[in-house]
Image (cartoon, rainbow, N blue to C red; front, side):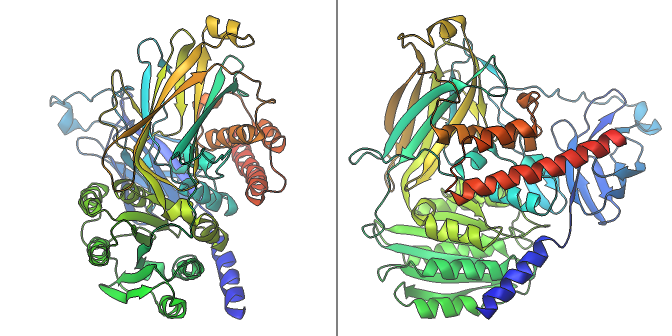
Length: 588
């Protein structure tokens, strides 16, 4: 009890030790054209960052309200300036005299291409996030088909919570809307009989735009009985490098894994690979029945050394293969802040590495921790390519949620390569926009053969939400008995350890109901969506304000649900943080 109290105090102190500012802006030339790969030197941090390939934009997490930058790029004059880090920076570089006389190739214009998905790396201080480009409205007549992966993680919500609890604005690229929505496992209904999935759809009004409607697509995965699932082969891959020597990193992970161990069965096997300076097998394969030995082994881990992540991943997969259980649940659980600094460490290199390892039939779960140098983009890459999932642990309560309360959702898959194709009916839908799934979205004219699906865990409820602009025919029939289909949904998946594809077709009926009349879970999901769009500073939220978000949330919250009630406090914190920021901006 004394150790737990000490840990809680240290963790609380760490979470409030320092604030953060999110410095955003664009680097352009004198003709207002974006400049990519401009070098941005932050004087206080003595660190170099680069403007993104799209829009010449950048985002950097800094600790000071005022800072100095030096921006440079070959062929342009360097520029040094003092900046206020909570305001948008429009940085213009002048072409150098030496370069002015030379013919320069024209920059490629940045346009929304329906066949392209943006996955450009975005740097925020020592934290890294993928740059996300919001899905645009698409004309249903020209492009009726859209496809997207249902590999839905939940890490973004707890990461957003970490920023708000630290009284800091949230980096917009850290907000993955679908992960915030699906954090709550809303509107879950067990599929009938032995079906793997059940599908429901609902059309309702849009609170932030009266001319639009919302379309909810709800996919529920069968819930497994933990007492009847096959034996598991778990390899804990734990980062014990020097960067993990903080209360909200290795100590938190140790407490999390010890909670998890309590639910292991005798038929389960656990091994531990640790990496910090060197890579080694810390615990040889051990029966889940020997809980005391496993927990003692976890307790003795200490942090030191560099981070050889690449060789550690190879070692963990090799160990998992050596203890592979045919027909069982074989999984590597990687726990880290993602700061790989030895060996291959780029997103592209890790992508190639993990793509090869997944061929072994071993799944991957990533548990992220830490702040300041957190590498969200690396863990997201590993989880996606490792045919697994990804959670961010900001405190011990989140660890308990992920590894105890939602154990089967996190670590037991019911289907692989799950993706959805939606074909809209142009007679009923003029335009549509997929909310979230921004870095996974593929809008396809004819097929979705190139779309890579993801893993869905036991008992998961996945919500996908579209904004739709209804046609006149839609509006005339929404309150009648006429049931013209809004769209046709095709859910494709494979059973675990089986490459054959299975397809489910669902007709999306025009079952319109006002937002105040639909199931409260769907209305609450709407509030979460508005909250996420607000944090993302989305242009699609129109003039919806924090009071409206709070009103929708309060009218739909389940008062007995701790997580939903906690969400209300996050809305209040967000309101205070962003209103203060807005007032400061007006004053300036």
